[in-house]
Length: 230
Image (cartoon, rainbow, N blue to C red):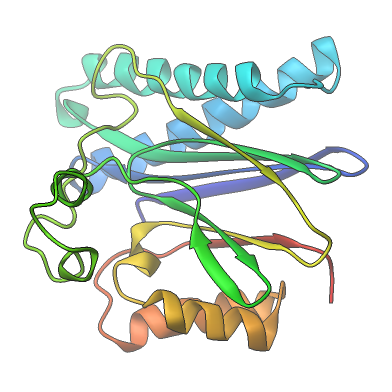
């Protein structure tokens, strides 16, 4: 399994999650995903322990991604088997109703609000660049032969920087974080329908993963949900 994730609760009303999808062969992908995930999580925990819960989480999240990048890059130089390995990463932070996300690659964070699912993060991928240049339409991306080729990953260059997005959460909002094992196989319409039916429950995660596997999903799939308990 090349996916790794962790969810932490540093203090009351404060949560963060890290989700990574490794690449670089079976062994390298698994190692890269695990290293990136836990390097980022460890950094955030240490930061909060040393300096307290930050008012502005952006610098901390960016540095967490940079730490993950450094750890994966360093390990890739030490072992020929891991040469060129890398990973996507999504680092999500929420304190009360203020949320931030820092990401690299094509693992995604979605916001589900009032029955509508919207993608917050923007993929670092060849297909996204083609869409941005107007060379293909969004509906052509699903079956595109280059849909799984990412243009940015942690651990491949010596240094990389994640993109930051901020969200002011409403009481009934749901945050969905996932690897492309879900987003590449299950339509946004089906994801939204499942969230409407099951909310922020473990059953909802199971249902989404079942949908991906049910249509012949050939990739690892990880789903993390955040929202008020039903």
